[in-house]
Length: 191
Image (cartoon, rainbow, N blue to C red; front, side, top):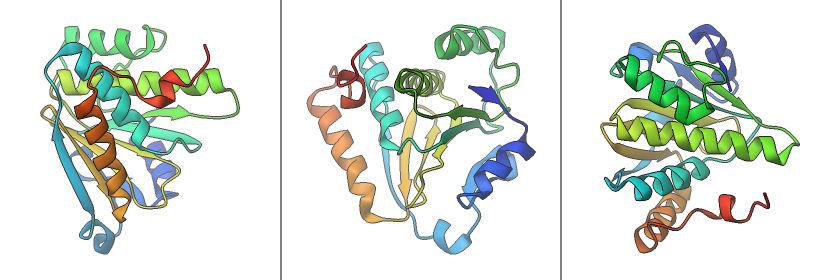
């Protein structure tokens, strides 16, 4: 994980038609696409273990690609204790998130162990954002359908310009049936 400036993040996001705009929100640049998104919103569970598993399912919804980018918007204000909690939960304090408004870039490559570690860090970040009722956005470089995730006030919204939003429905149905079961991207990995 590395922190970026808004300008650096916008270079990555421009590759896939996104930008960090007003209020530090990640959004599609194209108004026509933005106005025709399919979306599904889901209120995250309050039980700690269910919330952790839910966060792992959410992280796995976006294709991995070369990178994933997470950004808090200006509605998120973390005090020192909250920021410390997120730092420890996301990355074991190896690299500090000094400012919640810095975009976070997670890069993926050929090392499966590093890839899974990055996905787990992303799921932990989602967990912290949902627990603390932050506002944030997650997007992937592998973005054929303008897919992204919006987190606000303890809820997750899955957005896509395609009817592949049905994959989010399946994810939520599977989670509702088995809220304590980890997603396949975790259980199939051999540690």
